[in-house]
Length: 454
Image (tube, one colour):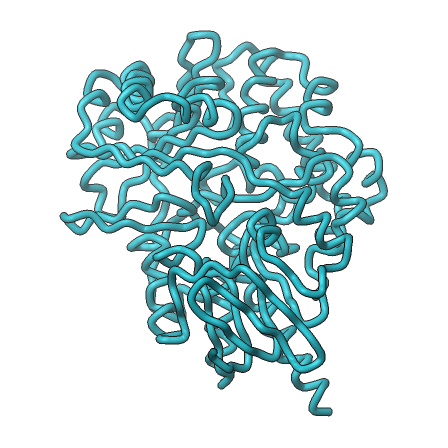
C-alpha cells in the first residue's frame, strides 16, 4: 500500500507530463505503467552504434508549442526533416516524381481534383470548433457519414481517390469506411487543417528532436524519479468520498484523485467501482485504434539523397504504403521509415517476418533501386499487437460517436480525470496533444484540491 496525493495511470507523454507537473508543484505522485518501459506510443531505441530509432511517434511541427517548451526545459534541440530532392508517387504502376504537396505530373484532371478536395476540406475544418466539434453547424450531417462516403461523393478521379484515401485514412490507421467525417474534420482542425496534417515542411513532419522522443521522456522520468513503477498494469480503480484506491498486479495506491492517461480502448479494460457514467463507459467502447507497422530500414548511408530523392514516397495498397527519410541529425547511417496502416497492415501482419521483409524490400527496390535491397538492419514495430496500446497512434471515432458521446472526452468522473492525446482539443493525435492533456489534467486535480481547502 502506497499513500500519495495523486496517482497517474500510464507512462506515455500524457501521464509523464501530468506526473512531472504535479511533482514540480510539490505534490507526491505514484505513476503506474503497465509496460516494462516508458514512452507509451513513442518508443526510442538506441542501437549499439549510438544511432537512435524512433519506433513510434517521432515528428514535431510549428504550432506544437507544448512539446517545444518541454524540449527547451530539458535542453533537447531539434533538427529539420530532410526535404531536399523529389518525392515520389506510384499510381497505376507509374512513378511520378515531384516537389511540393501535389504530384502535378499526374493527369491534369487528377491533380486538379486533388487540389480542389484539399481546399474543400480546409474550408470545412474552419467551421469546426475544436473544443466542441459536436457543436459544429453541420455536425449531425457530418457525423452520419464516413470519410469513405465523402470521398466517394467528392473525388471523381480514381488516382486522386486512391492517394487521398491512403493519405487521410492512414492518419487514423484504419479504412476510410471506419472513420466518421466529423472526426476527420475535427482532428485536422485541431492541427490547423489538412495542409498541416498531411504536409512535411512547415507542417506535422517538419522536424524531430535530436536523440528522438526518448531524449525528452527520459529526463522527464529522471525528474519524476522513484515515483514511477513499471510492469504494473492497473486492474481496478475504486473511488469514494475519501479518495481513490488504484490496484495493479503488484501494488495498491491510495490517493486523493487519479489521472488515467492511457488509450480509450485500454482504459475500458480497467474495472471501475462505482461504474463510470454511461456516456464515458460507452465512449471507451466506441473509440478503437487501428493497425500500423512502422519499419525502419537502415543503410550505410542515405543513398537516395544522392539520387535526387527526398525519401518520401507513396504507393496506395502496397505493403510499403508510405516511406520517409528517418535519418538522425548526423545523416549517417541512412534510415528509411516505412509506414503501412489500416487494412494493408493487417494483411501483412499475417505474413511471417521473412515474407514481410521480402515484400517490403521488394517495394523499396522498385522505388529506390537495387541498393534498397541490401540494408544493414531492419527493425519492425507492429503497434497492432501492442497489448497496452491497442493499435495505432490515435484512437478514432466511427459515425455517431462524437455527437453522442464526445462531450465525455475530458469531463472528470468524480475523482477520476482523463488525459491522452485523444482528449486534447489542440493537436489531437500528436505527442504535443498528449503533453497538453497531461498539463490540463494536472491543473484539474490541483484545482479540486484548492476548492476543497476553500
